[in-house]
Length: 210
Image (cartoon, rainbow, N blue to C red):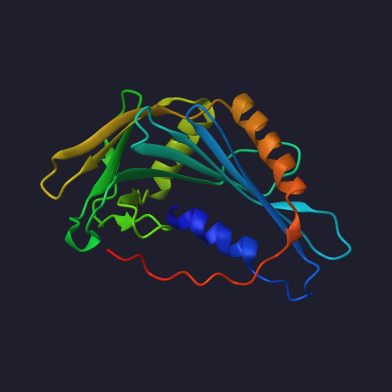
């Protein structure tokens, strides 16, 4: 689980100040390369509402994903208000990881990406897992271009680069078309509403062990 999904879990499981009657539900629905995660919340005396939506489309080898976060919605999804690119890789020893950066190219345009580098993080969860991830930091101009490409399902070419500019991994991804993602959203929302139960206690997440 990467950082954004971990934060969503924290929100989902946080206790309500209004008491134990607050209800929470969540659901993840997948189809082919697409995945969508939805959480819902019901406060005492109110109707349940969607409070978090994150959608992904993976590359064919699942080494990269285009991600889109949406403002809470009910019947359908509007345009994404958050977009990102995440790379996945083996990470047996996080302490020995080298800095990397992610660059992208939309259509025949130029390659672009943040000029600085970061080390991958260990995927949250089972400490025996050796998967790591790195989410791209994209400036305002790049975010606007990526958001437009996601909305149009344009091809986005992505690469991981090492400190010397060598390619560590690459892929081409088209974000799942809106009608198909809307269908997945409807299924995930329905399942999350059916999953309503008292919200759990706060999560305490220890750091992953190498």
